[in-house]
Image 1 (cartoon, one colour):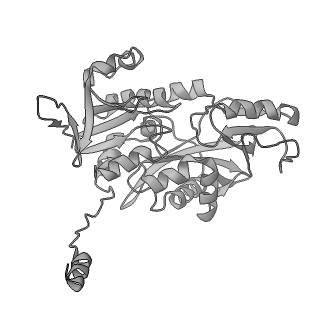
Image 2 (cartoon, one colour; image 1 turned 90 degrees about the vertical axis):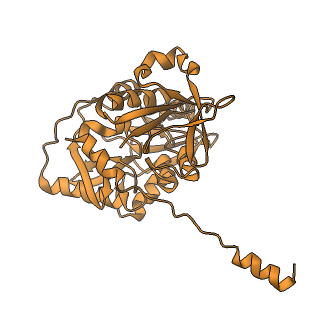
Image 3 (tube, one colour; image 1 turned 135 degrees about the vertical axis):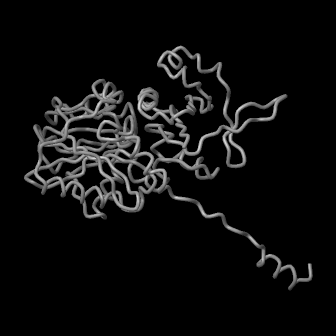
Length: 348
């Protein structure tokens, strides 16, 4: 089965998406089609041997063939020559952040009835916005840390947080720790908000728990659930953008967290509650906190960096398994019986 990947996008996480695609090229040997979405939202077909960082940083990608969509196909060529269909059986949505994880390109793929691995629109909605993620988790019976949402321009002089400092501030619709900062006291709150507002008009504030245990678990549903190993990230106070950026290039498997079977099962149970049916067709990673033996969802990664390949013993097998359980759209057969009945009744 020939795989293709679509990556890039008009997003602060644009470069991370490129790094992820290059990493996946090294480990998925049936990944042969590479389609790059630039910040102008033009699609380019990138030859496999040109999947290098310099191709994109230098702008050389603009010399490659432009991709168009028509009749449930991705096409290249045109003009004097008949457009040629790109031969890929299934695509991976590898666009991080805006355009990819927000559901924009999922809508395009669904509209053109293309088979793909990635979150569908509904899954994107609840995982892209951290506030909606909190609300969704609550409905699914999964705990999250307390939080406050503040919008840009809101008067913060009378805001009293329901938890103590230090706090962590995050833009509500960004990943990769972009715009994230820790505020130690109320005197620094306004400055911390200003940093986050550079990347969005809404932020979420949570208590910062120094030394909290954090565990990452990836997986998907393919008739039954298929899980990765549980990772306990070894990190400093928190992973800033630069550290996470390098992390997206990982292709070597990590070490399994040394935790009890009971805790591992708790993490899996919470993952299942989050995945539900809404994330069918996607491989996701859930990042959890554990506080006083209770599991809390930190965030959902609907398109993990490098698709979290480093958490799986056999990532290629996992992808092959997932491709057999992708949601399929039903073609609706319109017979125009209603219109014909009206036509006959009116004699027109």
